[in-house]
Image (cartoon, rainbow, N blue to C red; front, side):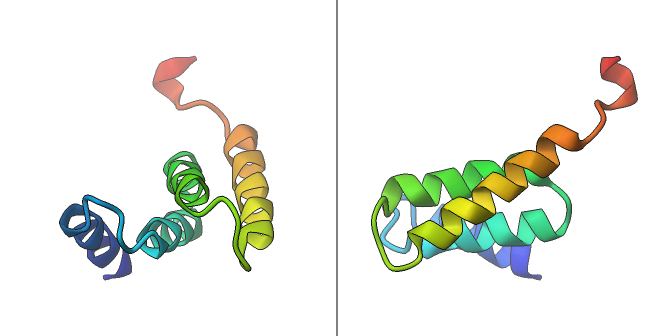
Amino acid sequence: DAEKSARQGLRVDSDHHIPKLEFLLGVVLADRHNYDEAAVHLRRYLELIPAGTETDNIRKQLAQVEQLAAARPAPANQK
């Protein structure tokens, strides 16, 4: 599955020679409604590639993911 492949790729690429893996994992996690972790990986991608042809769109995606994360109710055990 895509999440497993991206995580495996990140384990192998510990020096971040392929920063796109961070972006891909972020997108997969957002699609699965894991917004908090998705935001972590999108932020990491933007740290690795602060300027590029896709960064404006990725910043917008990150803002949307952060909004979705903030809108989620807290888990029952944290109330």
